[in-house]
Image (cartoon, rainbow, N blue to C red; front, side, top):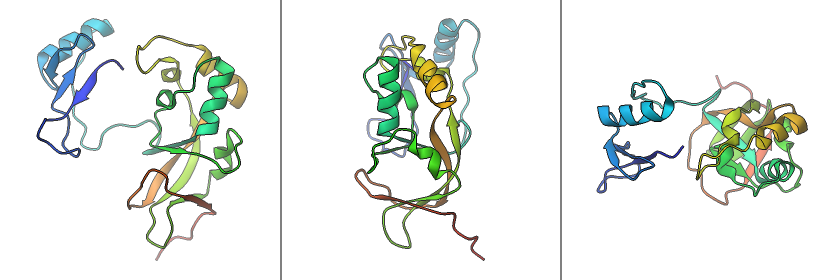
Length: 186
């Protein structure tokens, strides 16, 4: 968590990171031996650096969570809310501020914006959480009360996973609509 990917200074946001800044402030090539040795030293065993064409993700390509869910878990854990612990692709502010409301979306479709061309996500399953929630995003300090709050309050789930069913532009502040599953297009 304390290693930061770095893109080329003259590159665009779509360029892949070429270097990684270590917790000690060194900028090392992403696929160099020196970075692998440094990560392996901290991890306690050798590592091998790899590049995946489409990246890696947990159980689905899109993770969605509501601010109300993040706030409730944080309250139960006795911590200040920090959405970065949950690593969502999309953070939603609900009209009806009830935590864990995302469960109601499973099987439905989220449309991000208005119109027939709005991007859509088929909501596939509840997001089963792991111990990564316990790591402070800035210090990597453990706070096991976070996962304990999720397990106790909501059967170890918080947020939902989904699959992109129509691509398009997504923007901060955009209205998101929920609907039942759409029929398959011929």
